[in-house]
Length: 363
Image (cartoon, rainbow, N blue to C red; front, side):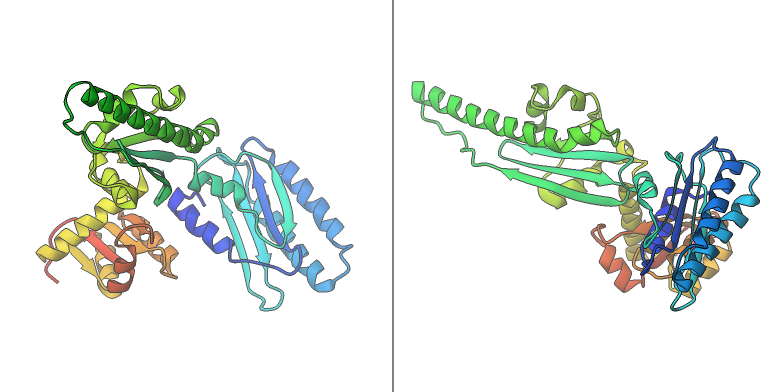
């Protein structure tokens, strides 16, 4: 099963729910180019060793997981171009079992096998959580906000502020001396912002996770800040070409900057979902027949191929079912996280499910 990043998030979420009292949950990562025969030899060796496990319940669970892995791998002539990941395990107390085999959206980086008390999802988590981060920076002469945009998650990392007096008309030398003091205070604050921004963004850049930096702020402060070398030169190379005018600091300011960034962030899930929620609210207010909500109504619209965008709250238990149905019917699924401003409102008011239609329909 080849999965995209959104589907992978849901699979990881389900796998992380599993906990065992013994090392019976099997995790297997196979990178591209690894011969299937080598993998099967390892699994068969592990199966023979498992016979030495003293506790019968643990031994049986491990042997079943390994047998499933061997059976699944035996059906594959060649490891896919991006590798293969397999999880298998059961709850000996309830008899409930789980088996997942998938081709991830990015190359599997390592060959890894382990039976443990948890499924090892860390290599998959790197593919979806921090592989395409956008740095966010709002700057004005006496305040700044540093944030990160990770997929459909917005994180406020730090807020900085200082007291910078306004200009006063003292006249003569006193005025010039006063102006120089204010300019020095502003410069000192910009230096402080630059140091904090470098501390947040540079490690992510060095790890290859930070892809771009979006800068905004009111008036000319953002330009004054960017003209000098307050930011590390490596970060300045990835600053997006357009600076964004925003009126606020903190989380409201970051949201405003993301909304105003438009095409600069067109591939970012958070920005895309935020825009879709705003579109949903617009059609809701207009009552123009271009949205649908209610489980039966949404399902019918999907089956008829009418839904262009499916909005689904991350809080829904049956999220995977709706994601799969959306893909089968050609709708673009967007998961609405609680980080989205109207995430809770959407979940509670519409039961976390709605569609934006391709064409107007009278229900």
